[in-house]
Amino acid sequence: MKNEKYKLLRLGIIFDLLGMATMAIPVVGPVLDILWAPFAAKKMSDMYKGTEGKVASVFVFLEEILPFTDVFPTFTLMWLYTFVWKKQPKLQTIEVRINE
Image 1 (tube, rainbow, N blue to C red):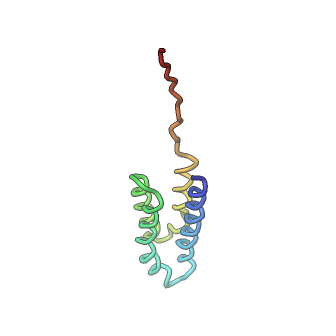
Image 2 (image 1 turned 135 degrees about the horizontal axis):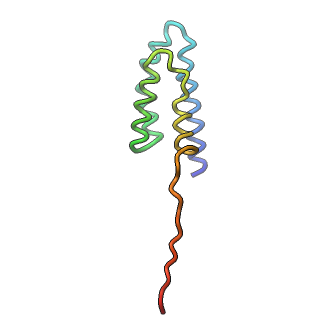
Image 3 (image 1 turned 90 degrees about the vertical axis):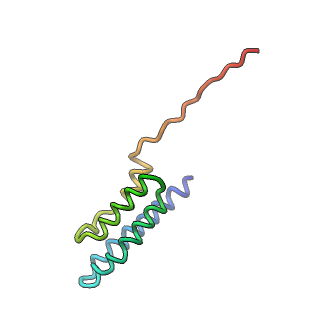
């Protein structure tokens, strides 16, 4: 589980850097964003399952398609939400006694 967790972080940082790199190309950058946005949304939904992954994929699509929003590291923020900020349910031990 730990290896998968950090694999998601590495992939997220790479995808964030790729998304931000398009800002550096003056004329071609916006065209690349149009191509990158659906790919990034698909990758986000593949990396994070369920409703949270779907919501995050919409956010990453909008972040990539809208001008001047490429600076937000959406993949990294999703990783932080999933593994750092989100409250994980605590496991509770239930003691069972059997009468003999």
